[in-house]
Amino acid sequence: MSHLALVAPYDDLAALSRQVCAELSEDITIATGDLAEGVRVARELVDKGAEVIISRGGTATAISRHVEVPVVEIAVSAFDLIRALAGARELGSYIGVAGFRNVIYGTKSLESILGVHIQELIIEAEEDAAGVIAEGQAMGLEVIVGDAVSTRLARENGLQAILVTSGKEAISQAIREAWEVALVRRRERARAEEFKTILDFAYEGIVATDHEGRITLVNPAAEKILGLSAHRVVGRPAREVLPGVPLDQVRQSGQKHLGELHRAGNTMVAENVIPVITGREIVGAVATFQDVSHLQAVEAKARQELYLKGHVAQFTFADIITRSPIMARVIERARQYAAAEATILITGETGSGKEMVAQSIHNASQRREGPFVAINCAAVPENLLESELFGYEEGAFTGARKGGKKGLFELAHRGTLFLDEIGELSLNLQARLLRVLQQRAIMRVGGDRVLPVDVRIIAATHRNLEAAVAQEAFRRDLYYRLNVLQIKLPPLRERLEDLPLLIKALAEKISQRSGRLSLLFNQEIVARLQAYSWPGNVRELENVLERLVVLRGGQEVEPGDLEEILGAPDKQPEPSLQLPLRGTLAEMEEEIIRHTLALTGNDKEETCRRLGLSKTTLWRRLKSWETVKA
Image: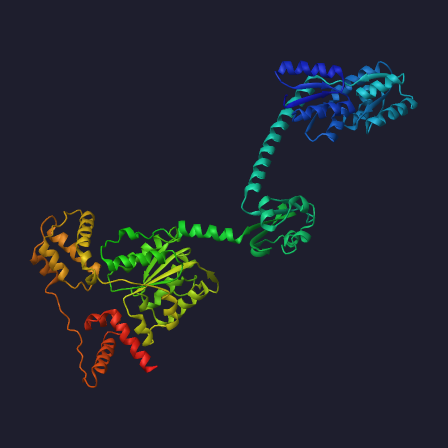
């Protein structure tokens, strides 16, 4: 089936059209049918795939009223009418020109040119044709000039008739116009399909109204978000269907409404409403709706991809080198904590690997795809730390960045924030941090908006926070918020069995990083390193090895190298007990233990070490004294 079809009102036009198509090499389906028959034929052609119908005169008009595809008319030119009227003049001087308005309009002006009297007989519909011809006959018309139906009826009434025929030029011109219309229609259909696809698969819900405020479009996303059914609401006033959405207000005022929140059932949506303006006339309004939860997911992804580059946890539990039973228990506990969401407090001496454990916990948690943001609270001045943690708005203080700045809490959204040296926070910042932990929201410095954040806190300190709480240097309520899950890292001197493994692994890493040969260690050197107290723990060990790689790369380490770097180990005298011993043996034992606890800041492990007690014995003693007092 061709994309074009031609319906000729009479046989001669069909024959001439076939001749034109052959000469132009056009593939067009041609059929014959006048008026109602032409409409029936045209419908069949459309059902078979015709995109544009070509016809003439009243048949073209009738077809255009009954089919949904474009109809291109074979124009009846002035030359066609003049030619027919010239033939009619030979038959009589009182001529009636009968037909549909689009065929005969303006023929009256040809009277003076041809020297005849012309009467226009306008046919509005096929059923009117017989009456119009009879009326002309009653007027005394001698000849009827017109289209196929007019001339046929005229002859049936005994009148002479001349058919207005179309020439090849008119037919070829109509074919060219029909192809242009078909091309434009295809483009419009492609655009419509593209537009429909966009609407159908857009995440945003879209509702459009016309100039009367009636809904003309509801896309699938809007049906889902707003709980609507398109076929039930299209055509209804928007104010009835969506009373809380200012579609009528925007249509009447022409002013946009952007970024407003609207509750649709159990869903909170963000809505934008804009007017549709053609020229200077407002012809409708369009509202878009987005599920806030979807916006939050997009925001989280944007934060992760755009703002959080570099905030990545590098270490996992597999990177922790140990064969120490103490450290193995710590790692097992940390793995268990990783599966939870509660805040973790990691305690341990400086350099014992608190951040490495924190990163490992993050990478083993459900937040592993989110950011890992770390800050050393002791390394940032207090006046800057607040803006670093919570961010600031533009103009919050002199020198504030234009547009403001996101704080670490915002950057850590959907991830983990590691607060190292948490014990160094001022009381003012402790209060703000406590508020964030309670409300799960932050407010930027100089801002008035509350921003929700989804962050897991892992805090670390080398200080004894219990003692700091007792001295009112650290907030008790914050301590309890942070100390939900606790991990205490042993110092290196308590896991000396790990030293050979650490020496080998760290030396190789330093050598690869610096491009130097690795070190050679004999048993004497390892023994001397194990005899050192390592107050700086693993960090100090790494620094010592780095110096050795620089000085002795590729060679065997000698005792003198260690003395040059470490010097003679300093044995710090421990505070001695100076108290009079009196009373019973049990009373003297209690006095010694209590004074030692005071000297160590209530550090029970250190107390046990100094007095040579087991933890179980100390616990039993303390419990028995509490029972006696009770």
